[in-house]
Amino acid sequence: MGQRPSSCADEFMTNKRISQLLPEMKTTAVLAGPLVIGQISAALIGFVDSVIAGHHSTETLAAVSVGTAILWLPIMLPLGVLMSIPPTVSEMHGAEKRSEVGPFFRQSLWLAAALAVLLFTFLSFSPFFMRLFGIDPAIIPGASDFLLAVRWGVPGMCLFFCMRYLAEGMHWTTPTMVLSILGVVILAPIGYVLTFGLFGFPSMGAKGLGVATIIVMWAQAVGFILVLRKSRRFADLQLFKQFDLPNWEVIRNTLKIGLPIGVMVLMEGGLFVATTLLMGKLGTVIASSHQIAISIATLCFMIPVGVAEATTVRVGHAMGRRNYVGVRNAMHAGLAIVLFTQVLSASIMIFGNEHLTRLYTDDITVIGLASTLILFAAMFQFPDGVQVISAATLRGLKDTTIPMWIAVISYWLVGMPVGIYLSFQQEMGPKGMWIGLISGLTVAAILLNWRTRNTIAKLIANNP
Image 1 (cartoon, rainbow, N blue to C red):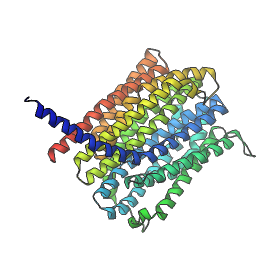
Image 2 (spheres, rainbow, N blue to C red):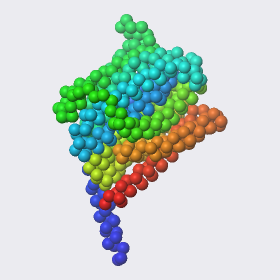
Image 3 (spheres, helix red, strand yellow):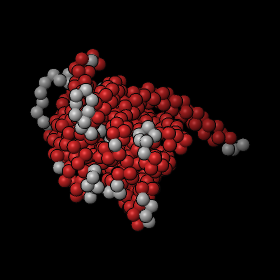
Image 4 (cartoon, rainbow, N blue to C red):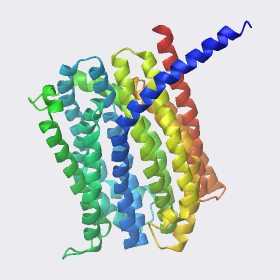
């Protein structure tokens, strides 16, 4: 009898939490919907590249595979830095400080421009880096053509992401969706024409896909400028009212939050990129098979990434209102949605692995190996979902330094050593590297989730 009141109280608290969580899940889902579609559309650019390249030749697919890996390795750092924009803008929005958004955005543009210059410079030396890394000499010419073309689209890409993250921080995600879809619509026909050489154009192979990517990057950037200038939703922010010189204090504070995010994103993405480059040392068949599996895994990963971006915005908005229970609800809502989507992704990979690989190539050898690697990708869907939501919540809390070190430990002190040992020392080949990926993501999921729950619990306890 003595336990019954406590049980009733526990049941009441559980019901109360559920009643709070369901509306938050709905809000997060509505916010995340366009982001998920936008992320999938962005990933479809890589999918389209791979399909076009794969049907052109196995050599072209391998070149685009390695070229894309080297492209995304340096891109991760600036994109991670710019990820500090949504939580900052969302917190301003939640605290009803809209007048501060415009000046902050103009400083973010300076930061995006500086990052674009650094990225352009890095890509200019990409052929040297490929030779230094020991990439198969047969792959380097095509990959170099792809990268030296794509670098001219980098300024447009950085500008696009700066504007995109501003809009997302203001809870408006539709432009991201529309312009990302536009990117796929532009890339598919132009990439095909330039790669194969139709309508009087020469056959450019991997370089053709690079040129098509330039067009996509700048079209998306120009499109977002028009959206921000014409939309009434942003009229009071006066985003383009004046020209501001760099404010080094604002930029420094943004870097203080964003640089650890950039390093964290680089550590995770770098693990996958380094794995792709290691596979590139083993020849075109393994490189192509790995690229197919990574392409499919990346496409599925875009769903939790979209939900994670919405979770960051919701957490930042709750922090602006000093609603710490709302922070917890935002994290739980994002996690619940992602665990459901990961079940779907894993199921598709398990039961449709061979059918998926046939979309990329007719090479029987590549199909067999890629189908096996996709099964490994299915195994890390759950830890991947947990770690991405945990990291997104911590970004919303502007807790970025400790998560950065967690990423370093998980991916480079666990994931990469395990992968190299199994792949090369135990001669497991590509399967060993994929076990390394699973190991790194699992450790990251455990540590980041612990950090997230502990941080939120302290916030609630210290602010009753």
